[in-house]
Image (cartoon, rainbow, N blue to C red; front, side, top):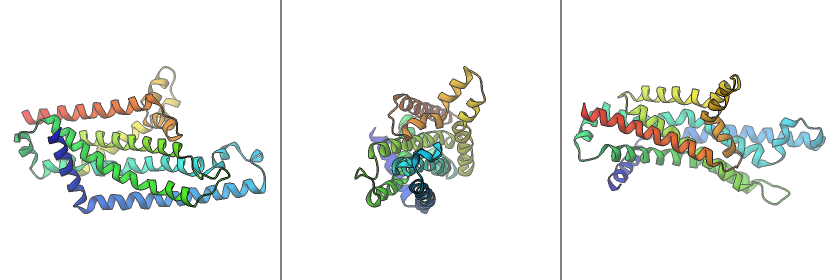
Length: 267
């Protein structure tokens, strides 16, 4: 475990000593800020409409705009998940592909490091950078809590917000695990990023396919869909099934990565 942690520290230092991490941080904050402002504007418009009439007369789709938690924070997490779908592949692409491109992967294979330590260390490094990236988005609920107003005295229901953020972290951790495996298969960082995106996007959209399917296929596809598994967490509901699902995907991805590294070590 000590070796894996040393590899993780090395990976994190490489992220933070290159401009790439800061480019990703800036992109995450900039995109999140744009959608946060748009959500706030929509929330204010709906609240104004409700003041001019009554909530009973408002269309049902506006019910989620009764408070800042559901009207802004929960919807913001949904947006952050989509942004992460684009950001995570560019963070995970270098984990193994860069080693291969720089011809240092062969040195790792001859070093006294077990493949499992290498895989876990690389993943922990990637997990650290995606966690740091997503943590920046907590700034927006904090701003809502500080400047927002509510009849109850608290602008946000923080239990809902934090459970939703846990869902975002699980999604980010899963993206990095899938990206790690694909990065282990190629020496091209750009190809690794594109393939990771090509795997994650259809997996996320399985819910749409499920709706057009018959049982029992519908139930299976709904269970396997990332979007379906995230919905309860984003709404503040702690769902053990979702934790098990994401943990299983992460573990399976790391197992495949370990196998890929072993095969390349023996080649």
